Image 1 (cartoon, rainbow, N blue to C red):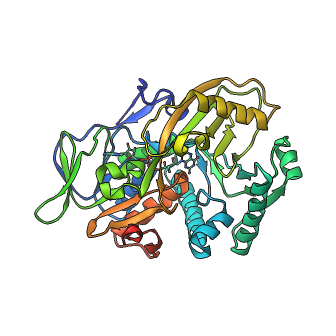
Image 2 (cartoon, helix red, strand yellow):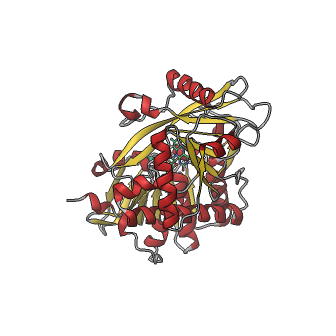
Image 3 (tube, helix red, strand yellow):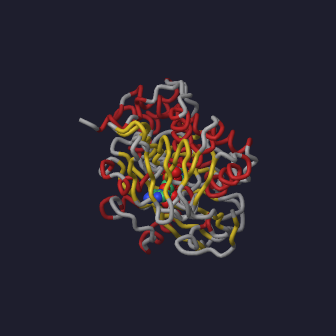
Length: 412
Ligand SMILES: Cc1cc2nc3c(=O)[nH]c(=O)nc-3n(C[C@H](O)[C@H](O)[C@H](O)COP(=O)(O)OP(=O)(O)OC[C@H]3O[C@@H](n4cnc5c(N)ncnc54)[C@H](O)[C@@H]3O)c2cc1C
């Protein structure tokens, strides 16, 4: 394991990846383990750590460097709930499923905090809550509905009328909002690589490999998964696919079930003082922004203005019109901000599941291959809890019923 200062594309433009990249050696031999994991994002790393705690030997293979997929390219919001406002989720998937999703995301937040504390990770956690801001009267009506539904399901939140939002954020631009005290924001790459460093140093039954793209999955004579890379292969009792947006490239049965969607983000040079406190998302989550305690603004979104919602491709370049759109959006909402200078601009690929619920469980007809993916743009909390559930389910140690997430729901 090394920390190399030389930052190479496609990392150099990403604010979180600008200082250092943690590197592990590629796989260069044939190995065996109880469990193989493909994908070194928050999901795969969380699962690896939990499985090691449960006594399994684990080999994790990452295509690039651990944490440089979506997990190191996001806005660092650790927020509860799915992509939709709670009231909308209730209408779309029903109250029971919405409740379960929300409560699992809260468990994800708690597990993530436990990991930060137990592994002493310096993840720059800024425990300042989150604001869901209404960009229109219609959205405000949904935010009010959301507050009502959340309260009746015993989830903690505070509805803020427009005047309260104005007092807190010093802008008239929003019609109302919801404050969630348990949410926070952090440095996502430091968190994932902090876990990887902990695993490497403390959990000798886990081996992590970077720059080891998996080209094929086959089975041996005993029906065990065999995972092939250019210079070595891994034979395991079980395999976990933690490949989120890229899952369909390894198994075409996931085509149309987990859809790649580009997310575009900019960071500015530090501002002269702190103007915004907390993680904020607005316009039904399409735009999101925060000002770090060190002064920089991180602004993401603009996807609804891109052709086809920016889905069905793996282009990780940011478009000039998205940069301009995000700058115009934030200046329009917060005219009090000083001149903004863009220091970093980047994109990443999210995995949107067809029904907005994560996928967790074995593939139909293949009990030795699990999937944990499809976090629909909210993977910090969900990737954590679904990664943990995957590990416990594989180890036979899970008491939760996870059938709500089973990929078999898509099989007719
Ligand atoms: C711009 C952007 C902003 C976002 N903002 C937020 C946010 O603020 N809060 C939030 O909760 N979520 C956010 N998300 C979503 C969140 O980042 C993801 O849901 C989460 O990171 C998914 O984690 P993961 O480990 O499942 O996937 P990833 O982090 O994408 O990891 C999957 C890994 O699998 C590897 N892989 C793929 N194919 C192979 C192969 N063949 N062989 C080996 N390895 C392979 C990839 O290289 C990748 O590293 C955002 C995403 C983006 C892109």
